[in-house]
Amino acid sequence: MRPRWDGQSGAGRARPSQFDYKSLLSGKKADWRHFYTSNLSVKTELLRRFPFDERFPYAAMEDCELGYRIEKTIGLEVRFVPDAVAFHLHPTTFLQACKRMVRVGQSTRILHEVWPELARPSLTPYKRATTAILKQIARNRPLTDGIVKLADEFTKIACPNPLMRAALRCNYLIGYAQHSYRQNERAAEPII
Image 1: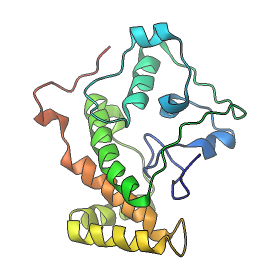
Image 2 (image 1 turned 180 degrees about the vertical axis):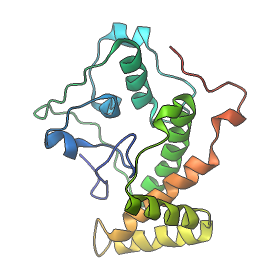
Image 3 (image 1 turned 45 degrees about the vertical axis):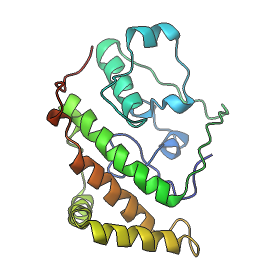
């Protein structure tokens, strides 16, 4: 069950959100970006050989990092089974989602520090301009908080609504800017 306000993107995408099932349903081949351990089945031996990287402090991006590491090391085939049913429910409000997006931004920053080649997504000129504007907004915390409150109020009228994506993205950018794993004692190197 996906929250009504959830977008349609995933790891390594320009827009932050939790899962990218829409593209899988339209025929995209699943890869490490779809290694969602909330709804995934793998052999125990694989996880023994490739444990989660404990440098990720939150349940965000640690699974995609694991998928990427496996793919780079031994290859990975992720199969999407559209008829499979899994229940992994976390009732979430929009305000809780905004707080989570800060943690997702922090975790994405760790992913990019561990695997720098993932840090440079190719953006269209429109997305580049939009991201630049949202980065400016995210630097102004009172403005971001105002957009979040307005978007949350607007959910009573329309959900999803145009402000929700901007509010989620700003919170993601706040988290991304806040966290630099290089500030910590452990070096940000891939664990293989």
